[in-house]
Image (cartoon, rainbow, N blue to C red; front, side, top):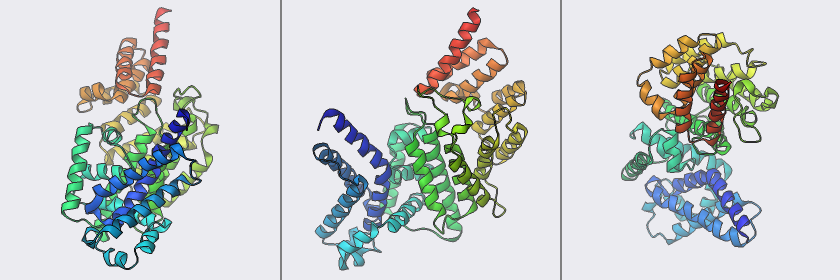
Length: 428
């Protein structure tokens, strides 16, 4: 196979790893037990390495995903047949496996069992005995195939910290022989909160990617939406908060095609062609938002999806109901006292001709100097607000800082264009 074709195979395998590895790990973990998680990850990794080797020298299979699942099934059967003692497998399946190895394994690779196994895997990773940060890292790694670098970006920390979290979590699950189960009663609600956080982070990593050259990583967003949909279709997750989170994802994803132009340049919200927004996704978002209104609970996901809906309902940027947006952000701030919410609220204030007030609120943030010097979004917003206030000195200062901090080439290009416009204006 020629080099370009081999590169195509590697890209396909990378794509499939994102979509299939979590399913394979979930099913194999249900068979072999959480205490064999590292062995399972190795088996799955071997399957994908085998795919690269085989597909590079032979014709691609008609169903690559099915091919990988078949390899995983066969490998599971081989391991089971070689074992003399079934204590190494999941206790609930040991006797069943002894009686009918091949049919049992085939059963657990059916679509319904794959879905159930993934949900069980998510809840197992979100075990309350684990620290919350360990739960999130482990779920992103095992269920969604995140790499350590991606997890560190999503959780705003470094790779060494994530490696420690993953080791700590896996060791606990192994030492305590944690089973793959879906809790009930109050325990279910406790773990669902962590599950929501994981899916929210997964979607955001795709929508606001920190990977250089990739502003939008649709695969990650699609995976978050798939898992959230999976949760809505299961009796344990069929509840208003899940619908609110899925509504938020649908409404945000509807704007994918309008956020970048053909030159991979960012198109800001006020300049986007709203006719290109995905109307089917918007409609789905509204449907899930309506479903989320059942009951009396009002969560951050309800409020954030309502904010996204306001953007989708507005005929144009100028016609957005900014007063209602401010009210929604005030409500959100009551539940989520975060610097990012305050920053977004400040942006809404500028649309109500209250830019000076917006700047004051940003500068009153706790640890604002650290935020400005470590996270580009804060300096980028400050630069934009100072630009609106005709303070060119501070506008240039903070835009240049933002440009140096972001790893996204699209963001660098956008900020560079603003700086170039400022430079030309100054020369004239």
